[in-house]
Image 1 (cartoon, rainbow, N blue to C red):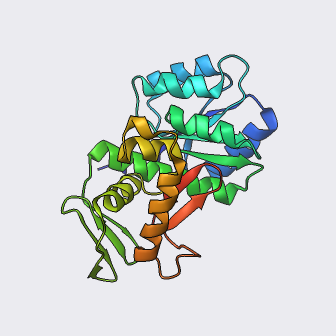
Image 2 (image 1 turned 90 degrees about the horizontal axis):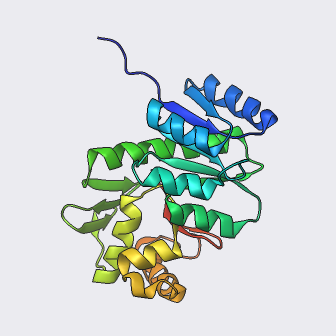
Length: 232
């Protein structure tokens, strides 16, 4: 029986030096690559090659990256990691709200990029499998099927909203969730501007789950964007 092929990554960027950097670093880790220099080509390659992950620069010569993500999400749940210029928090939020799974801020190290790629591919595999089993990060366990949360084997007593907030983060473990995404999924579409709700309940979760709530290990803030549950 042949071994399973290594993941196929669709790299979408029109900057030749960046492409050389990505090609060398990703190929050295055993990933198979297909490349696209613009949005139209990216969508065509995604449809014909069925990649395991799309690595997408937002600044493309035809369609912008946000439109590429939106069009992809009309028919595909392939994980998308966007490349975002430093300090452009609005771009990160727009990309995530459009359906991207994560972002890497330029300039970035290959080590950081590879870590984000691994997490996104794992998340994509869980999404395909429909896994609703326990999500574990160190000694924090969120059992989505039983709706039970434990820390070091002890059950954490959470309110219904605290549990819903943690469950959303657990289902997307490793992926940054924007304030708006969390508000829509936990409170509903009418609460999309109530960012303070998320801050208040995240503080309560940290008090109940984190050893040092002021320096959280698991419930991580992405400044100006949202939160993520660190994946173990």
